[in-house]
Image (cartoon, rainbow, N blue to C red):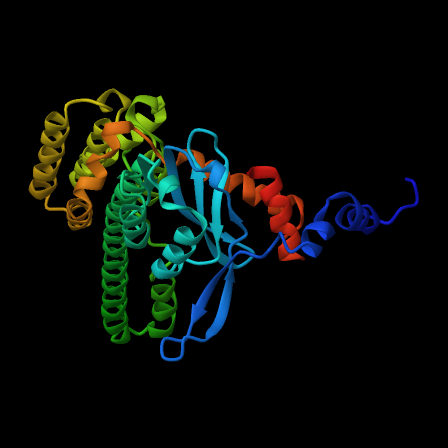
Length: 366
């Protein structure tokens, strides 16, 4: 409305009001890097940027996670209490990250960290235990539950695939039977004097593939097939049973009766969700471990391959999963920060100038 091109205010801000040119000129911005050297010669062959390494944002409770920013993967560390970013590095390599953290965070500062929450990445777990000696590393509960829900959906897909296969076999059998009946009628009609007329009438009686009726479901909703029930259950299974609506209960009750394996899978999912309830945080670890062992036994008894795979994964990360109940920290705030970064990128229509983008990002979120 003022006759100013949209790029003009952005140009003014970047070059005159933001302080970005002064930072670049004084070499106090974009100077932190991870140096990658040739092992034989020791010559630096590549550098990766470390846009942020702020010691004052390191606190007692931290999270470490990955984030894609502008088609590149970054490692991000966030202070759980202040929700401020403390570290961003353009790498997921363990040795490179250790080099950067050691260089920009002194050991005395790293010793202040008492808790680190992460996903199941072996790299992040190893870094946390080696560089933060006083920190208790815990696996974020949402990552565990995500694996459980994936196993539940795998069971649903297997049931759906079996239903589709059964219907295809039924249709093929019906088509083959109709074809044989038509062939038999044609043979008998060939001996009659009215062969041409008879043949024409018999061909009309042969049902096409489209005319074969599918079995109607006797479920809670009239005219809805089992495949539709299984498709609708995709979202119902992700919800807790306590928040199911009447229609959800009717659909799932029908499916659990028809396919008991789906009911077993959902019961296992609900049990592990109850185990992760807040009331168990700081509870006696012996009781927490006992309940988890009970769940392991239920998984073995269920004989569901997808859940057996999850059980093996949980046994592999057993100690770090149990550590969640000591403090109850999760990556929720880190994931929230990832969402803020994503919205920040969307509002800026992506990343045109990576250096200036991170300059603004650090200014806003650290």
